[in-house]
Length: 313
Image (cartoon, rainbow, N blue to C red; front, side, top):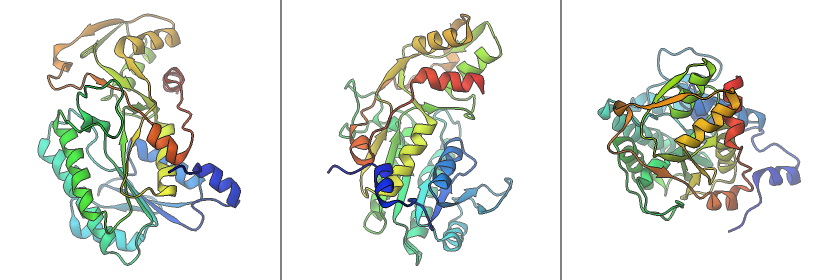
């Protein structure tokens, strides 16, 4: 069903979508959460967040380990959120602690959903950040939400398991699943591909070691991803899953060419076998048609602009 974009709804109503409302972001110290918090604050929400115990605290920030069921329940009862963006989790595909991947991404999410469903104040929207990695090496050139999942690594399996587990709560909570493809921006760890490439050029290094040069990815700007999450929280399409992507894929060679033009020099690319994973997903290119039909025009940032932003930061 066609819907007006959130921004258009706000223009008609003359108000702010989050005025007088409380938003909870789990994993507030994470890369994406920083940008989503800015989006939600600008939209009028009072933003609360969770961090791991021992992290630096601030106003409306709650230290809680999502694997601690009682602590999660106490936090939810105190915050009483109107909307929830669940971003906390293990986000690095090559994370070596497999047990922790499943515990955090599945059990931690279940603890949160259980607490939200049991609370006296029910949220109007709960966004769960999954991943396009659940599609694995799909045999179609462009992946939409109808493509059957075929996860190829433990991270992807954990995210798909989280999605299936969340179905147990969809009769109690307005849950929306976001499946972001690759995205990047200022502040992302150099464990990830684009920050690694950009940082080499920023340091004027003459050589870089990469993994499989055959891989191609659909890269988005983190600011577009944060806008999409905010809009999904506003329109609350419960029970649905949405790809969050630009709709365009870029090869590693293309990325290097873009950065060479931005930095003004060419870098020597060497393939390091240690960085080549046997279960690597070779191509991820997504369709964002379903998302745009619900939240309105996406206006993806050109990848060259995102890379320049990161390079000049």
